[in-house]
Image (cartoon, rainbow, N blue to C red; front, side):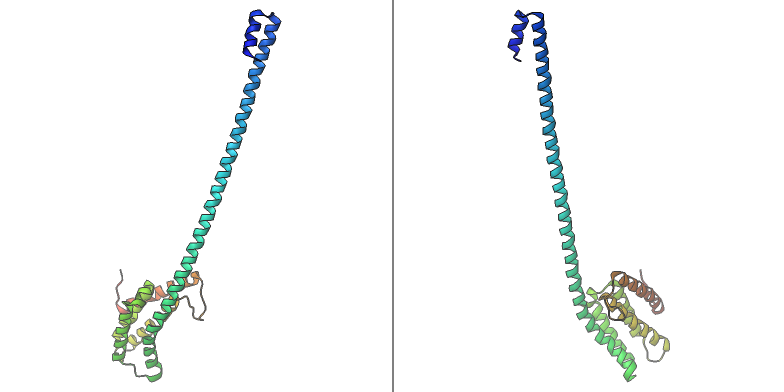
Length: 217
């Protein structure tokens, strides 16, 4: 209803006309308010829906990013591990040639001498401070040092130094194989089996270090 008409009615109309006009104005106000309220509510719902769609899309993008990031990290870890194992195999094969010299002298020729063990000990020391030692796990480097010390104390006469040298050599072999994830049956091991193997090596290493008089921090 037009407010000018309502004013004219107030000035010239009868009480009934005035009442009707008033009711009409009130109804128009209520209708307009309700319509605006419904319109605002619709706009709010649409905005909330858009906001939820945006948040949902944002969450999906975040999950996708996290997945891609995790996949990239796993691939990177795989590539790095593969490269590390390949490099270790090459370096470990070199040091094993020196260890084999001890084993052959003991088993086949029986001509192992302190001169030979000291020469091998020198090779082991050089390996520890070269690329091989850099690639090795800390436990393996500790075992290499214990083996080196056991070689130096060998005199070809006393039984105990000879026994310690054998123990150190075998422990060194196990440590090297553990570093490249190989078991006694030359099969790949799980990370849990590798961890368990290294724990065993660490325990035996502590006993050997005590026998050789090696102090650790």
